[in-house]
Length: 224
Length: 292
Image (tube, rainbow over all chains, first blue to last red; front, side):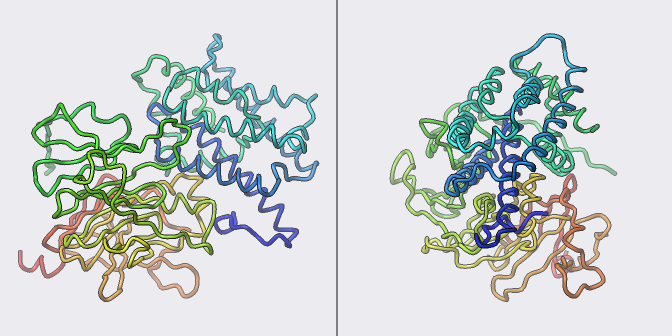
């Protein structure tokens, strides 16, 4: 599927460059989602979080050096973001149906609901890929990465909201990632099994509602 | 006939750690021991449960600056003032408790320079040391990272003196292993009594042994199907293309849910303990079994 360890290919190879950038973006997306899921655990694995965060930083640095925050040709971008729109919408629709009526700010499922709103049909899908975008994106990206460790310490329910309020939703190619993660759930130690397990009585009252909701979301993911 | 074992705690050393504990190691003085979590190492007296001394603290003032954690630690087998700890960036720090109360400055830093030809986004993750063990002689250290085991000489900090590939065929699959989280699996390693053979676990219920003198290695399997009492373990082989023998397993049919993370070797005899999921296997060599 992926090139051997995603090594840097020769710049002269026109065909390979976009493929490498796509793979790199995909790895970045995957890593960010992993970090997000890490953070949702009652007892996050610090070593794993640090390693993933370092990987994200590495990718970010390379992308900064390349000057490439954006890569795909406009039509690919449109198609890709529309795909994301569909997948996250389905996810949120199911979650919403089963969700409690009260809107909990720390509710991870509500975070997912934010994404399609940001990518409403009216908004240009190419907005993410603007030339101006990079600095902005880099800023919010950087901030979210730094905030991750702060919030790992604080573990407050509102922290999730805080953490991801600035991050551009288009980073999350949830479809591809979640397929991978659900497929790997059997073998992964820190994977989705951990969520199901932590849905049981948890020490912190604030986290309990989050985990209950998350458990429900996990069921939906597994079913799809 | 099932044996039921019931345990009761004799002493509880509470409130010493904020983060997940990854190692404990009893000192050669048999009076103290240390416990390590992701960011700190504490020294305890075996008989005193309500007090400990913090001897290593790598927590940054600002958690946003955190890029490295402690992954394993162990006391030196003979010098009760020396201990080593490993990090998620693949480095080893040998510390001397007599040098300072807080051992933030290492006496020696063991680190292998990165191989530029193998560089990838996963380089750091696979360099993270999951286990470190002193040799019985006290002269060497054995470390395990994701793809290799390495032997280090305490007198040489620049690089390991020996490197053994545990499952190099996984190098081209790192992205998938990152995706399914297997790349974060932490394998242990072990020395035999004479420090001539080293052992570590792998996937598919395989474990590997490397003879440091003959440079020969073997892959064995710990599973109910292939282990009847008194049966001799048959060497296994993972084929990576090319000629395939009858009992070879191909890389793509390896079961990554069957991982042997914990292995131990008897300090004097050739008896090993292998933990495979929820089963514990004890193997001994034929010589031993004839004697007993």
